[in-house]
Structure formats: structure tokens, C-alpha cells
Image 1 (cartoon, rainbow, N blue to C red):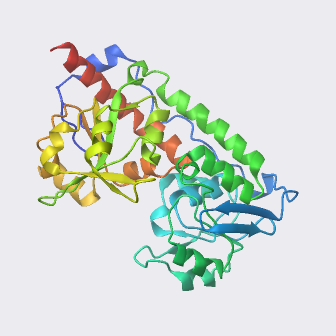
Image 2: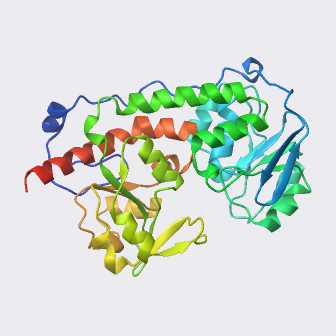
Image 3: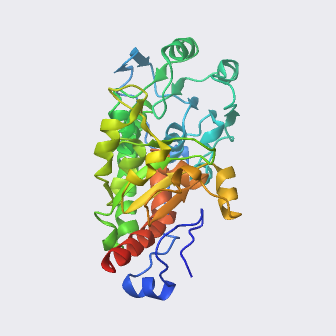
Length: 354
């Protein structure tokens, strides 16, 4: 029986389940979650560091006191606030996730208002929520939006492009802004432990090379390949995987998006998909494309890829890898790492059979 992960088919050499289980001990998917603090009253909130001033690319943001009403504009912002025991009053609609919902169960507070993702920046809804602080640490907003949002409440951004891509630094910054730095340190320690537990029984995963690329089923659509300093590659590196050497060619010959100084991704011609070589290619696709794959469809841009181990990430799986939050990383460790370990094992078997 060929491996078919819960989020879609994986190509590669057919290896039986017994062969895999005989080679490594399976890690249960139900490892204890990276638990959030039990109730907002149980979290230590320190006011001694306030007023707090933060410098970023758009200027300086001053937070007068530990905020109680927070609007979170990304998954990382929403997840971290909830993990630190503070229920956001509003979150981006796309920030809702199983791990966020689970963290909210332990917090006293009403469910957050879901901001409309189809609106570029729902200023009126944000204004009506009367926030003390607007968190935009995990996302990117324009200078124009920053100026408009700053008229509503202090807007917190990453202090630099590099610091905004690592879940540890995001957690620390949001913890500081919320006056919950001690809780943020505990969250990091728990998540680091969850990461170690998730890979403990998968020694073969360490050093496995990986590429993360977004692809579409549209004819002629090119591929977006993410650099080694991206949020998602940072998460995959946490699990012991290594960026594939092919990334050097992608960075040299691909077209950068988001600016040459700090590119979000590189556009790669679909005709050259066969050059995207790695032990595992993680392909980010839409849920519609995933449904099509399960019905026998295909992703034209990847049909020429010489990739024996192809893992499709859509929906929640894709969100977990991209979230850049401690909760998303812990969820990925429990639910995605076992599938990546299988893909790594198949590739090792294929290579040994050459």
C-alpha cells in the first residue's frame, strides 16, 4: 500500500507499512499539546516595563500599559496572545485554527470577532472593537495601513524583518508587549520540548533535505519557492530537516517577490520544475486543488518534477507550517512530522536501491 498522508497523495517508492514500522518506532499523533496557561488570572502580568517603546521600520510604537483589548492581524499574533492567556477581541478570519480554539478553551473571555479577510484592511470593524493594541508581528502591512491603524491604537510590528520570521522571537516580543514575558519564556520552553519529543523516534529525519514550494493546478502557473530564512523553512529546520542545495540556484536564478533585501519567495518557471531536487518537496496547494488531487487530478507545474517524495500541504497543514507561532509548531510536530518521517524513510530506501 503506497503512503497517502492525511492531506493528500505522496509519490515515491511503494513501501509497506510493516517495513516502515519495523525500521522505526511510530510516534503517536496524540502527544500532549503545548498547553496554554490556565485562565488569564493565572498569568503573571507585569506593568513595571511600561510605558514600552518599540522601534521598527515605520518608526516607534509606544504602549502605555499592559493591554487588555487586543486585535490580532495574523495567526502568529492570535495564537501567541491566546497561548499567553489573553483572549483577543478580534482576529483575522484566516487566523482561526484548531490549536487557537484549543488555547481559547483555557481562557476567560468571549470568542473573538472574526475580521473579514476579503477586505484589504477592515478599519471600521477594528475601530469598533476599541483595542488597546493592534498586533501585526506575524504579518506584513503597508505604511499607509500602519498610519491608519495607528489612529485607532498603537500598532506593534516586528523590530526587524529577520526577527519577524522566528516563532521564538515573535513569542518574546508579543509577551513583552502584553506584559507577560515570563509566560512567553515558559511557552518557548514547552514548545522546544514538544519539538524534541516530535522527532525523538525519527532519527532518519535529521539532515533530510527539503524544499517548500507553493504550486497551483492552473495551466502555466509558475512555482513559488521559499528561501531558507522564511518562516516555514525555519519550522522545518526545527524538526531537523535541512534546506536543499537547490535553493542556491533558485536564489540566483529565480525572481524574488517582496524585495531583493528580504524576499518572501522566489518565482520559479514551471518548465524547470525538474531542477527543484530535494529528499522531500513540500508542496503548498489550495484546498480545492487538494480535493482535485484526491479525485485523480494533478498539479501540472509539478508533473515534471523529479521528486520521489512529494508531500502536499493544504488547509490546516499548510497553516500550521506557515503560522510562525509556538502553537502551530507544536501542532505540526504532532501531525505533520510523522508523515515527513515516512517520506524521508521512503527516500532513503529508494536511494539505497539505486
